[in-house]
Length: 232
Ligand SMILES: Cc1cc2nc3c(=O)[nH]c(=O)nc-3n(C[C@H](O)[C@H](O)[C@H](O)COP(=O)(O)OP(=O)(O)OC[C@H]3O[C@@H](n4cnc5c(N)ncnc54)[C@H](O)[C@@H]3O)c2cc1C
Image (tube, rainbow, N blue to C red; front, top):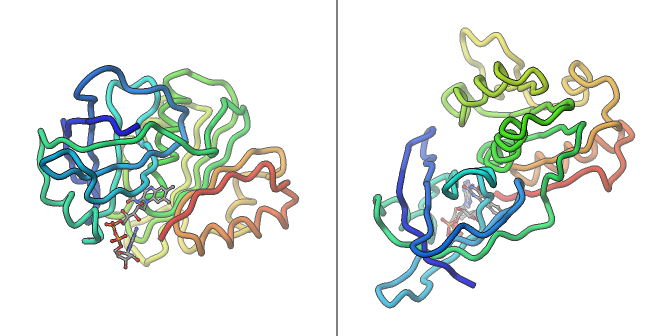
């Protein structure tokens, strides 16, 4: 069922990447689990769908709006969305998707680019519920300016000792004291001694996900403990 939502907030998050807050025109936000996605519809004057695309939900279920983090790639949907402002009405299907977080106590996340949207939803949920356990995010970005949700990730880590955030930059940057280069087996091993004890969520470009899935399989992680969502 396509419900109508109003865009209530728009914020630049990084190069060509924007955050949108959406609130239902009528009724409540339908229930969902951190990690799910939904279809965003752009509508014509009659309320008919012009184009629809799937997006990971970046907000967590306790939040009073749906947040989407969208890279503007000048395509069918994003080319139109780029020119829409606060107050515009869009459509959204109810949240769906088998990739979801069920309060697992040992959880590791691998994100590339806008794949962080799925992970920020889960981390916001973990922090809000003050869940106990071990939670680690590996986030691959090109340069410092491409680290989406950078301040929030730092705050989440500071306030919640159970959450660790590891960012790696794939392009050379001065004054960067963190990890550099593509995520690989050696990098994961520096932070997790027993990868197979964790449940893993992977989200980002398909090429990266395939490489990381192979890496996790060689570290003995069972396929059922790897959840993947890829695009691009
Ligand atoms: C389950 C799921 C969740 C998704 N979640 C998100 C999300 O949270 N944020 C997000 O930004 N996208 C997300 N996507 C991708 C999104 O659905 C669209 O594909 C994307 O926004 C492009 O749509 P478009 O209509 O503007 O481009 P299209 O008209 O479909 O494509 C235009 C051109 O842009 C290229 N292109 C498409 N996506 C990208 C990209 N990311 N980077 C560079 N070039 C690209 C295409 O190859 C094509 O050449 C998700 C996809 C899936 C399947």
